[in-house]
Image 1 (tube, one colour):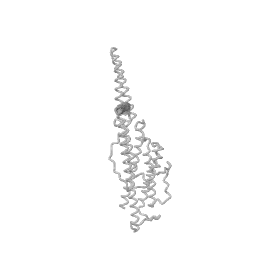
Image 2 (tube, one colour; image 1 turned 90 degrees about the horizontal axis):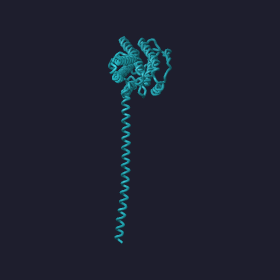
Image 3 (tube, helix red, strand yellow; image 1 turned 90 degrees about the vertical axis):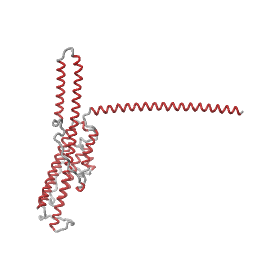
Image 4 (spheres, helix red, strand yellow; image 1 turned 135 degrees about the horizontal axis):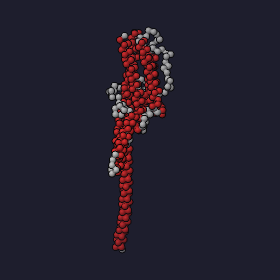
Length: 372
């Protein structure tokens, strides 16, 4: 009986081991098939990714726009200069200003091809060159022997395609270089505008402080005591006060004209977002300097004029943050890209020059009045 049980146990063990081996082999086969499928899918994905990379590379090679990274870097730098200038704050923050005068750059060839040709003239020149190449190749083909006509016919499209490719890559390089010069000029003009605006605010704030100190000392008050002005003809620095008022009014009117001129260059939706972000209530285009009814020589009134000018300037600077040629997409591929940047650069340059003139007037008037 014991021998039968032993034989049965051996038979059971052999049967179980056979079943386990079958299960293990089936499991191994499934794993191998799954690994093969994964390898095949990985190979397909790598192949598709490689094809996609080749397509993107060809698209970038044949694109006349700037690389996306360079365009994004320029736009971020442009916005950074404005947003960190403290010129968009609700109140004047002259004690936070910290700008350095930018180094001058060569801007005579900004947006031009070959140092002095506009884009339209450059395209006409390239078209003329291609036409001359076609004429020359046709003449060579016409003057050849009849035996060589087959060879010439084979060479003609090859030569034409080579000339066309060389012309295209020359145009691509010239256009990208022109856009880079426009970007450099835009950053320079913006830095000059920020520098002049900040220094204008600093000098004007010092001028108002100087008037207050002179008024206090002339009355025998201590500098720590508050100044309560009355409407009187005995005020000190009367001419200086009037000059400050005139400069602020002229600056306000200049910024009003600039807002009207910049409206076609902005996106309305983005401009509304900027207004909401910086808590700006836009005024109508015919906004006027309606402060003449008050005492135009008091310090309080001059400070109100200062704030009114600052509000209009904030409204203007928001236009430069909402430009139609600075969207999240790739704008440098647009045919009117250079034209719009030429207009924006012109506005930036004019504003910087006008603000610099106001700054020089404040400095000169302060020096003359202080000597008196």
